[in-house]
Every structure is written in C-alpha cells, then in structure tokens.
Length: 351
Image (cartoon, rainbow, N blue to C red; front, side, top):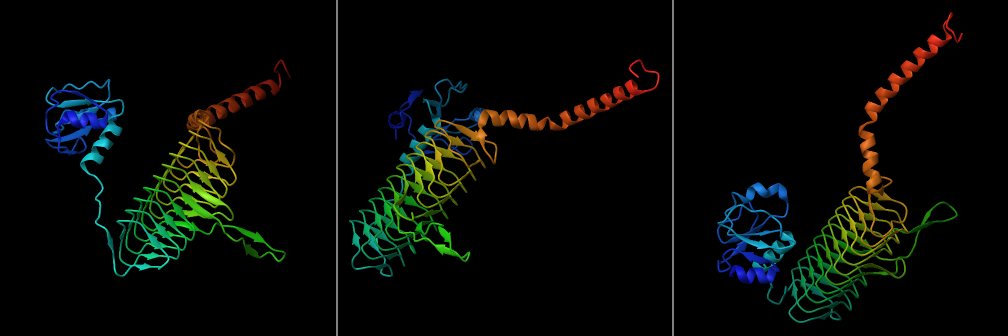
C-alpha cells in the first residue's frame, strides 16, 4: 500500500515521500523497512533515532530530527496506528461450517454463513444471526439471541434469555446471565433464594474479556451499553446498567442495581456499592472504592473510601510528610515541657 493511501485511511498528513510502499505495522523497536510505526509517548522519543521503520505516526507538534523517515502527522498517533493495524492485520473470516458434534436444538434458528465449532450446544428457541462464530464447547441456553457478526469463544456460557447485539465479542469462560446474588433471611435465620427471573442485554459492539460474570436481574434486565469494553475477571451484579463506550478494567466489581454512565472509566479493582450512580464521563482510578453517588465528569482516587482526585493527591502528599511532622511535634512537645519546668522551678519569676 502506498503511504499516501495509508495516510488517507488513517486520517493523517504525509511529510516526506508519499509514494513509498508500506506493508505492515510494528512498534518502534521491532519495525523493519516497509513498516509504519508510531510515537505517542515522549518517553520513547530516543527510539525514533534507531528505528528501521519507513514511516512513523507522530503528533502535529512533534520534533523529529531524522530526514530519512516519512512522517504521518496526526492529532492522535496511537489511534492512527491502531487503524493501520486493523488495515494490515484484519480478523480472519472463516468459511461457513457446523461441526458434526455440535448439539443444536431443532427449534433453534441459524442465520446465514454461521461457524459453529465442536461440542458447542445451542438450546431451544435460540436465534443466531448471520456470520456468527461460535467456538468449541460454548453453551447457549434456551431463548438466547446473538446478533450478526458476533464471536463467542470457547467455554462461554450464555444463560437462558440472554440477548447479544451485533459485533459482540465474548472471550473464554465468561458467563452471561447467571443468577444474581439475591437472598432473603427467613424467620429462622435461613437464607431464602430470591428468584432471578430477569435477563441480560448486551448491546452492539461490546467486547467482554475472559472469566467475567454478568448476572441476570431478579426482574427486568441487566444491560451493557453499546461500545462498552469489559476486561477480564469483572463482576457485574444483577440489575446493573452500564452506559455506552464505558471501560470496566480488570477485577472491577459492581454490586447489584448500580448505574454506571456513558464514557466512564473504572480502572483495575474498582469496587462500587449497590444502588449507586456513577455519572457520565467520570474516572475512578485503580482500587478506588465508593459507597456513594459519583457526579458526572468526576475523577476519584484514594482507595476506600475514594474521593476527589485532587484532594486525594493533597492527602497522599501529606501522608508522605507524616514522619517528618511527627519528629517536629515531638521536638515541640519537648521544648514545651522544658519551658513548663523552667516556669514552675523555685525562684523563677512566675513561681
């Protein structure tokens, strides 16, 4: 592909020879002639001097001293590089196929050009859209609906009534629609299981990582909004709602009936108490724990309880000075005792 075409498809502007051929994309340290690479973090500027790439995505204001490498100016080099990766390394499109060992209920409806692997199970009244790819040993319970062009990896379980939109990707051993954790204590102190009769709805273009659990609602639904990305080992409790284009990073836990807005980022190991609302465009930093509503466009950090990030930074700065403050306090206490002893000593004016 000519560099000029790559620039057009990645929304970049060429500085240099637009006619050179680009055959692939790779990082600064491993790129070879014919590759395009990128510089998004100034920490790696020194590697630009030694990279063997033929072209490089850089920001509009980046200063590059080399004249033997073509530049692709763009407001977001990482985004442009990602688009290049998609161009050069597209996802393979499998030929339509149904393995003879797959167990498909006669009432299930299959779209055109589906791919279903060995020992996959598709239950009663399930509906599978066109070009869906179901890997071996995946299990789809009764009344599951999967939208077109979705991918279900090995070991995934989609419980009864689960609905997936189009272009959804679910990675290995994730469980969608398992019973929510709901129990009521009876008169004798025993836990009585609350029926979990709801469902899970996953909207279009959602990707869910491995070993994640998204529980169905007791009544109604648990819903994950369009374009949201969920990492590995995430727990979404029953009746939760997650907005569009939100990121739930590894080991995030949402207790039941939590409402997470759109374009929110919950970093690793964030915990959110039940029946809370996290406003749109908010960020909860790693290991933040909240048990109160978070306003839109907030940034919270500081562990448990998490609070406003700027206040958290001031608190952490003060914590680092605690040892010094303790020494100062002890010195002041010593001086105060000495002054009190002098004042109370026989013959002093105050005595």
